[in-house]
Image 1 (cartoon, one colour):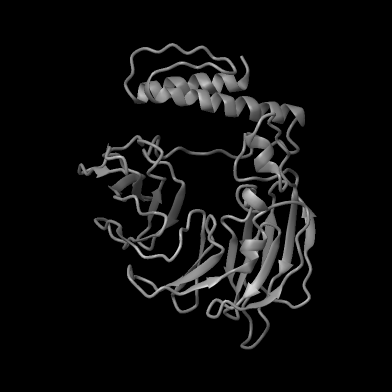
Image 2: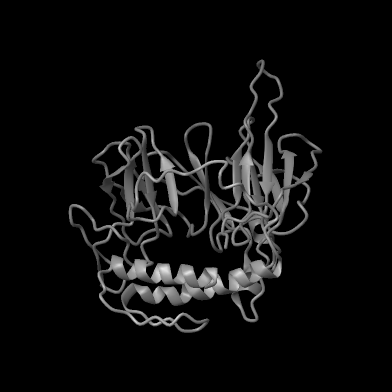
Length: 352
């Protein structure tokens, strides 16, 4: 049996057992997988795996194969019940993580019971966020959330009984936006779908005067309807200015005025942001004597072609291989250029 069939069969039985279904009829093929309840999702998963693994076979074996005996993972919690679309370690050694609330039920009910009504009036009593104790490997609390995410602000204090405080306070829709804390504790929210701007948000406040600034770079790097500049890479530099990377271009700008200080050279090779989805990091800063220049070096790795989203979404589907290169630049040094290195294998945030 091929790998996708094995995975689809396992996912079918998992979804069915999770929902307490007693019978199902599942014929694994490219186009048909009939099951009850949530197990119908297997059809979509099977199609995705079928095409993705056909793409894998088209390009042969992986560029880099790991030694399975070199290290191992230890499972500390079999199923927390909520997918960790985003997660953050808090100061009390708890991890908060949460998923979208519009994709149906999770595997964990709100405890104590709490229900919300969606925009169609349907009741949802499932948890879509939790706080998790790293020491005990247990869920401490389920978290509540409403349908206010596009312009919503949520604040969570680091305590065991705390829940989200939330309100609608942002000046634009921020789906697929990025955030960066500034030196005074304010933070900026950058971009989002069709939001070619950023805004300054003060800490610990749900209501505040809007301070929005346009970002021409986001408008210029959308690649039409493909976008390719969502979840932009944003870093605070030692001088208080901000580095912004979107698609394949980057700038340094003053977050208080919105003024572009300078544009950096274009990074060749393809698109690096969502949905092409490479990764980036600001490398550790080396602090020396007062007034010494502090080098802020940024790494941008992986991604895909500018057309990748279009050709994978629409038949006949194609799956371009992920980019293998890494670009490195000293972002706060005038005249800096990208240094290109190659990784052993291509990198995306989503894999087959």
